[in-house]
Length: 101
Image 1 (spheres, rainbow, N blue to C red):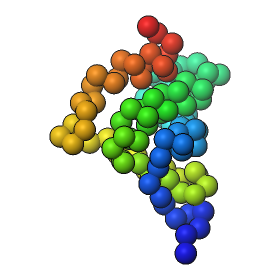
Image 2: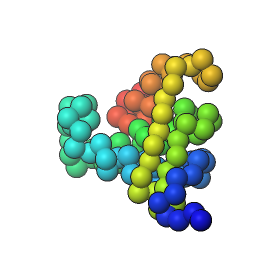
Image 3: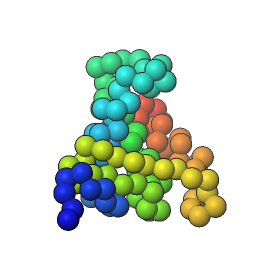
Image 4: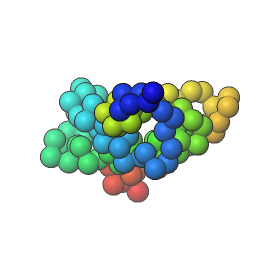
């Protein structure tokens, strides 16, 4: 019987929950602190980053699962053998996160 802790395949509708969970998880990550040094905007920018990554890479290829409550997320990015190349999406994802054009 499924419950709030049973993982399910993520869909595009799960993007807000997934990006919030991942942003909270990476908010104090040393690399993210280095890339996004302003702690007052880091959470919002990380949410944009993870939303972009999820929508462009994970959702189209079924590479993400989450619990019913959205408290736990598992996302995988594989080499492009079975999907689009990863590198072309980094610039748009970075732009969405940093506001750079």
